[in-house]
Image 1 (cartoon, rainbow, N blue to C red):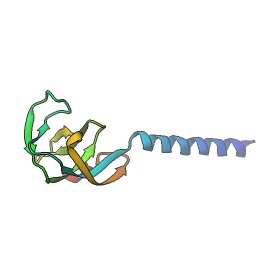
Image 2 (image 1 turned 180 degrees about the vertical axis):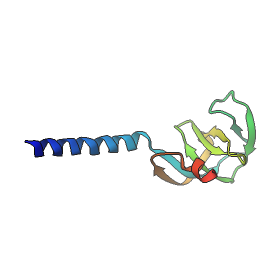
Image 3 (image 1 turned 30 degrees about the vertical axis):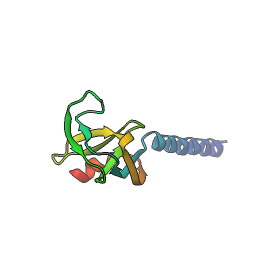
Length: 106
């Protein structure tokens, strides 16, 4: 009986870890800008201040936050945001855990 309980707890732990990895998954990608003068903002909101603009053909490393917004880091390691609608993903990887871009920027 104790052996069955240990197996059940082990399976529950594995399922929990797999579920946690999916929930915390982030898509990091190489993104190519698909329009000229893409506004890069201080927050993921169309009303946020414009920090800079990107032009068609530029490629950047970005984190896809959701269907609407992506982020990258400015030269001063400050996160900046732009509309995911105006990018083409060139390549991507799925990661779990901390934001890899932030770790690379440090």
